[in-house]
Length: 315
View 1 (cartoon, rainbow, N blue to C red):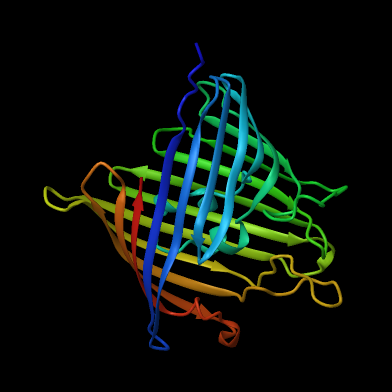
View 2: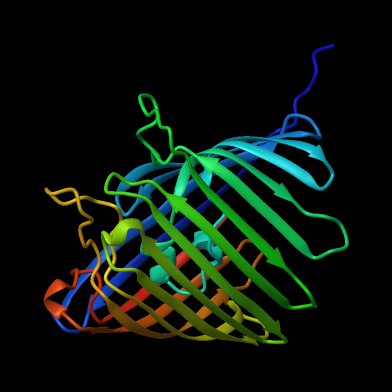
């Protein structure tokens, strides 16, 4: 008799939004994400995941493509393409984001996916999760002919000392063309009843003083209110402050130095989220973002004062 293999789990996330720039009186519609993923197990020890985004701001991107092997109940190894173990907010999938648009840490400063080998160790009864890995540094598309003598690395520790509190710290080394870059990140997440608080700080250091160090922060509060009956299940009221200094993503200038790719800015975000009643997660997110620049001439069109209405569906 032929062996029946376990069927993969199919999941997906659709985020569609409208944004209105209040300074320029301009607007746009956008399909921010149209993700589809397959994940499951071949045996109790061997798992896998493949995830593709059919519309990441209009572009098709392969996100996850990895296989895992559970050596021990507390220890798992993963090889392939994945999000590296680093930061808090950058690790949130789109369907569990708190705001329609990601923080600066999650979008620009600490957002890294790469190809490599990572391990996760969760010793029972300690509240600890330890993760570390080595990666190409090639990004998502430049793998075939990429050879290096300087692999990137990342390590992260999470600790839950008491119910509702998570402390996290992580470090990462990148190797862009213009020289090594080191990132350090730490923060906490606290959930107490209907209130959720989170704070995160990241410092990005460019070796050889080739670009000024970047400081980035993200802090938010979310209050959840139950709604009884009807279309909606919960109402969330949210407030966020995030900021970052002048930033380079590793793109070199003509003379080989780091090029500024993101201007220093601060942002205040306020909004509400309505969670639909039903078995599948679905949310209507409504935010307003207020930006503050030292040099507003360097502002990107998508990072000016704006109102955002987003519909998120996860299956």
